Image (cartoon, rainbow, N blue to C red; front, top):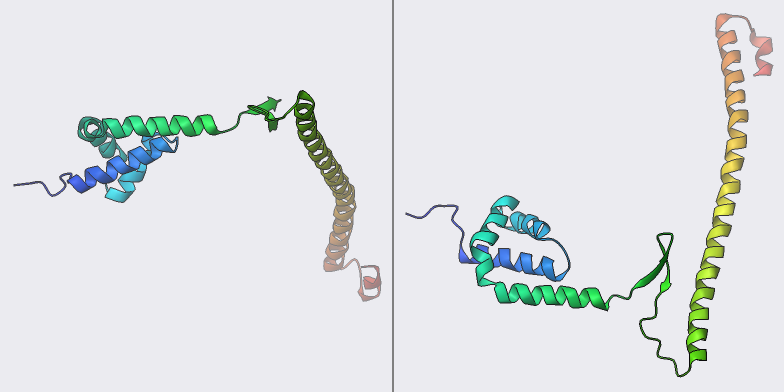
Length: 169
């Protein structure tokens, strides 16, 4: 008699497909197990156990290929120069310029674009700073006015002001 919750070949195939896909895309096996667990209606721990105990052995070549695909994809992403944790420009892996002067022009153009972008960002931040300062200046005046109106309402409710004095409020 076979268990109701036994793993089928189709379950193993879904699990392997999920793991290989995640490896190719640079994700972790844990994420793959979670993905497979949602598809199969099992826990991610059960998927991980099944993968490591039985399924992995049948997919060694596919696993190697997925890792190579991930490595190739990772290497094809252009490296970025960083300054203070922020990327400035794409580092030219190989400048295909005819002369060194053309290469310098390409790099100068990239740096000019970055510089202009940073100047735009500085201007935007300056404008935002002005708006925030204005709000900060207006806030106490609004609070004072609201406090004064609240005092008038309280005085009116206590009977200190009569109908003629309502023109104050």
